Amino acid sequence: MNQVKKYIKIIIGCLLISLGVNLFIIPSKLVASGIIGISNILNYDYGLNIPVLIFIINFWTLWLVYMVYDIKGLKKYLLPSLLIPLLIYLTSFIHINLSNEVEELLIALFGGLIMGYGYAFLYKEGYKVGSINILEDMFNDFNEKNTRWISRGFDFLLIFLTLQNYGLEQTLYSVIVIVIIRYLTTKATIGISDSKAFYIITTKEKDVRRYLLEELKYDFTVFDVEGGYSKRKNKIIMTVIPTKDYFRLKEGIKLIDKNAFISITDNYEVLNKDVEISAEE
Image 1 (cartoon, rainbow, N blue to C red):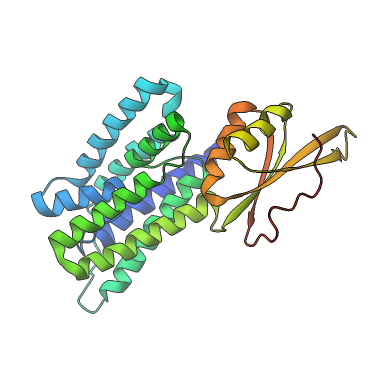
Image 2 (cartoon, rainbow, N blue to C red):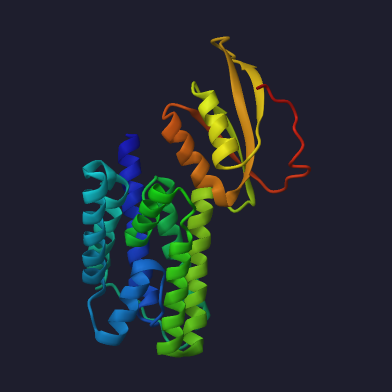
């Protein structure tokens, strides 16, 4: 049943993205983020088919993932990468009358919100959308550094191309769309706070400590705890890190101990962050 709900959410997410593109972005000649954005520009300038472009680009990046990681690496990319262009094509025949009475600002807001919530559905289920996310993850695996600069840099490129081709007004409205999408996807993935608190229980405590201190350069605190039911004694490693290093720590712990218990909470303010509460070496 849980799997059915998961796939329903994935379909809803892809459908929302597709409707946002066809009902708001294309009719108003706006530019969205990522591969959809570059497909918008190629469609406006050269008449190229948007779903076909998205499919071709995603196909080649999926092939690259297969060559690097094998078939198991495709899991979190495959369905959205194929379903989004298909649904954009199937919903391209749906039209609403966006008359001159509808403000361009409202169109940009609604387009960004619908697409942003679509991306949020997918991210919450652990899926990634399109070629830019694939490239980010691949670079992150090889250099263990935060690679969100790839998507941000690509969006800046889209904004620059929009400004060059369609003028300042369309650029500003497109920026609204991109910012809303990025805000909602970031909120869905890691929240919007400045820092995260990690609570970790692992059988490979020394390796996790070493990773925190030597690789990430963050201090931690260790608590002695006892299971409420099992009465089993454990240690909890607690650390607070900037949100920008959220993925590095989470994925690093999973690589060290795939069975580790990890609880992650948002921190909206941290005072005296360098004070050590209690730690056992």
